[in-house]
Length: 129
Image (cartoon, rainbow, N blue to C red; front, top):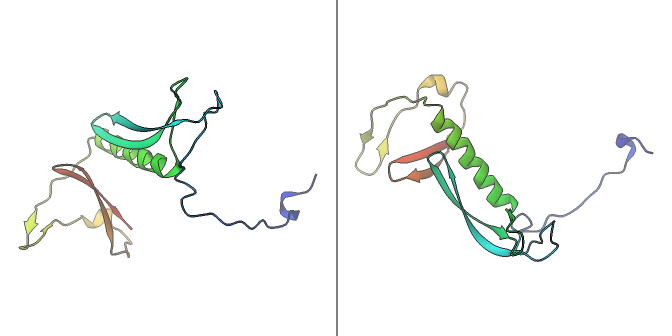
């Protein structure tokens, strides 16, 4: 058996859409699964995902992109359960609402973009990119 470091480098190309499958087969029943909308409720956070369901055993699977969305929802749910919050003043500049993030949260922050994900009518999650 060869040492891992002695193996030649493998090169491969990942096609567009490789992580968003159009067809999936059940690992138990070995039959094609049907497309399915899957609603998941995680202690106050609801998310609707596009996945697959086996018509025979009812097992459900997600592709990587949808599983990533579920992972983010789980993180948000854990954050909301922690009950850590801070009240900040909200300002309006005529076009946008703004608020300041405490410097303790942004130590050594050099990035200037923020991804905002709506959680509800009055809730959102902001991630610094």
